[in-house]
Amino acid sequence: MEGNNLKKWNIIIMLLSAIIIVVCGLSCFQNIKASLRKQEISSLRDVANQNAIVIEKALEARLDFLESIATMMRTENMVNDEQILKVLKDVPKVYGLKRIGFVRPDGTAFTTDGYEQNLSFREFFAHSMNGNRYIANRLLDRMGKSGYINVFSVPVFSKKDSRVVGVLFSTYDTAKFGKIIDVPSFDNNGYCIIIDDNGYVIADSEKSPMAGTINLIEAWSRKSPEASNFVKNLANKAHKHEETYGSVISEGKEKLIYFVPLKSKAHENSLYLLTIVPANTLINRLLPVANTLQTMLIATSLIIMLSLGYIFFNMHRRDKELFEIAYVDALTGGDNYASFKQKWKRMEHINGFIVAFDIDRFGNVSQLVGTEKSNELLKNHKKAMKTSQNFMRFRSLQGN
Image (cartoon, rainbow, N blue to C red; front, top):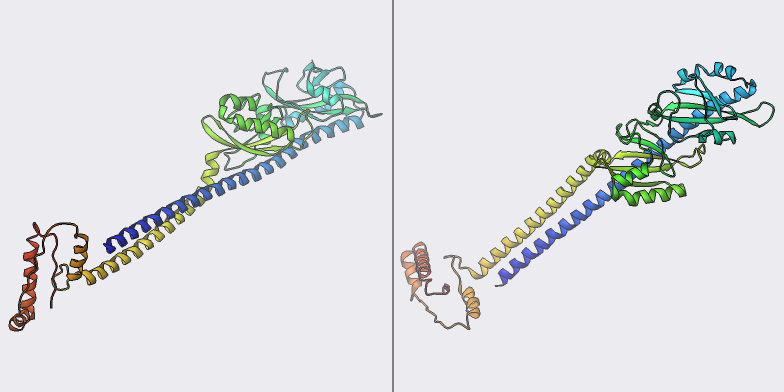
């Protein structure tokens, strides 16, 4: 009875230990996943901020380039349209522009590709006439071949005073302009989009699957309603000019996004850079680390469980040996008298009878036939008793 109870407790302890190990293992694995997620965010943040620095410099370089031409025009006192266009005619080809042009104070524009048109309705004209450098939203070209364009503009000042005498602007095909923000990242799986704080796209990378989108926040809200919380947070952070991180489901896949304000002031609204990467790209980069940690965790758990199993197996074997010493007759392998007394205590409430066998002067028999034969006789006696188990609850052997 005591041996069975001990065995049960050993099994219970072993099961509890296994459960504790599994729970601890799962907890550790969840902690590992959380740490890897933090590493994903940290990696994305670092790349996003590096992209922001590169793109800020690229945007400012294009404005500085225009401003250097405007300064030359002021220095040379160029006020004649033909004179200005003659100086500017080779600039688009050399610098990969669609066109470059000059707008008079009345809004009349002259361009290097031969167009003359009133652009007084364009926002970039109004802003630069007020003395500001400006980067326009993505526009639909109204000159020549239709398509989306990006426009940079700077004021041209009079040589005599600080009066603005016109606006110098450069135009890029949006498709070509996307190369400016095509910063390689995450094994060329990442891409960038520049938006203003209302969500309107200023420029996007050539690799962007949402090319041609007018308002990115509205597009995400329509395509992925579950991303509405992130979109709301994005808008809130935009107005506070803060960085933020999140994800959306686009084209059926999760995209991780890091949102960084750009320092450029050349827009009526603030500009922001979104660095976007498919979630599985970052996961795949960290997968070897996760698999290694998971393998180590599983191996450690198995070693601990096998060690516990070995300990409990030895305990069980020792208990069995002690039980046999205490309750099993060494000669016949049957129950001894101590076992009989213990079982009898459990059977006191049951009606029955005791059958006792006694061999008189068995010592004389043993001396006569020898120990081996006498032992064989006792074993046969035990077998005979075993065949009578249909009416005998239990048997034992007690020797003198």
